[in-house]
Amino acid sequence: MWKVERLADPTHLGKAQFRKSNSTKFSESIFPCRIRLMRAHSQKIFSQDLKARSSLIFKDLMKLHNGNMDIISKRVSAVLDATVSCYSGDCSKCKQHSVVCSGGDSNNWWTRSMFLSANKVHGLQMT
Image 1 (cartoon, rainbow, N blue to C red):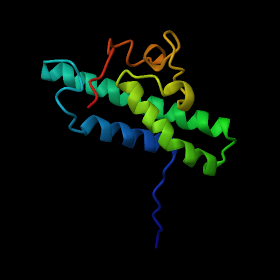
Image 2: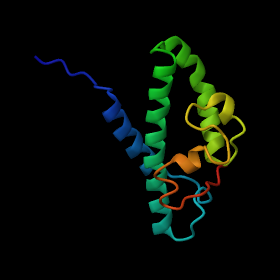
Image 3: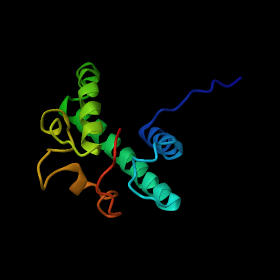
């Protein structure tokens, strides 16, 4: 009688992304905390940051390319690669591929992020 459709609007996608990231089992070394409760808090902060960063990346790509999904889909893999490198502390790819991190000393994602800097998360040990 009713046709049920999956609604993939930005709000629901962001919430789903946060839940997935927050429930993911990361390696013990990614967050430099020894205490389990502090690691869980750091993971929650990282999940919130990842959700905010992903949303901003998509919004900026849409604005930059006037909503042209063909161009955006071609750029996404390089943007994702730069994002992972940036979270590991290597911003060498950011200047060319990232739309939210310039890779500079003062204008980078680590200083822009309201989640990471406010909660004193200064580095992730990405492997």
